[in-house]
Image (cartoon, rainbow, N blue to C red):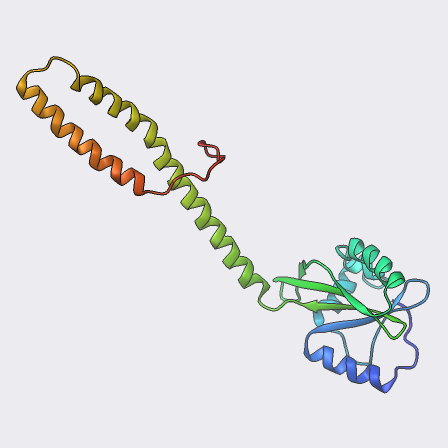
Length: 208
């Protein structure tokens, strides 16, 4: 980070606003360095990242947040070719001051001939990740049940074929009565199987 020049009142108001929103607003200077807008102290997670990167020594933005490296390359192209607009990056996770996972979202902004980088804390990221994980686990569990159901269809078809073959055989009256009951039960089971979920077309019948 370079030393900050004189901060304008507009920059100070902006910095106060983004501090409330838990955002760090940086401006890209000539040469590729960044300065924080305003005089507000940055959030604890931002300061901690710089201290942990290399305590007591000058640290660049990418050293403090290695996950920004790829996005900053995209942002440079964006800033060079855009006079006004924004470029949203992918959220990345760092360790927060309390040791929890902290999701951050980088945003590059081009405006009035100036280039800005916003790093915004994504509220509720851990909770959403937990919901997504639970949904994924439930989807995998459902798929496992469907595969088990599908595994029953082939032996059921073979059993039905055997019963159909027996029906054409020379059987005693009592045997035919037993076979009729078995056929009736198979028909009921077939209707139940037909109502149960099936594997999606093209899906492998074996689990991964």
